[in-house]
Image (cartoon, rainbow, N blue to C red):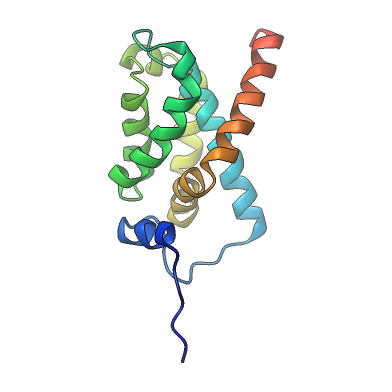
Length: 145
């Protein structure tokens, strides 16, 4: 029998309940989680609080992914609520955002394992997720969406 070694980051994530040891998911599930994570970051950019400096938008979203994942304890609704609060989205702006409503409806019906995977992807791949979300956001702005 061998003992698996964890790096400090993986150990911290397991302590926070962000990973499930031995959990292996399909490549399709991973791609879906990445796509939902990118979409979520675009939604956060849309509801980003007016009292915050827009120059910090992507930095704040990236930091929020990690901070809010720990606070959420793998609960997707709590994760989302914490994120909206972290970017100081107003309840009215969030409620009026069709993309946010659709994201909540869609992810709310996913298997809990996939919901946890979305949260995990948001932390383990946050730099890549934020980079891709920023690129998508630029495309949206150019198209006037």
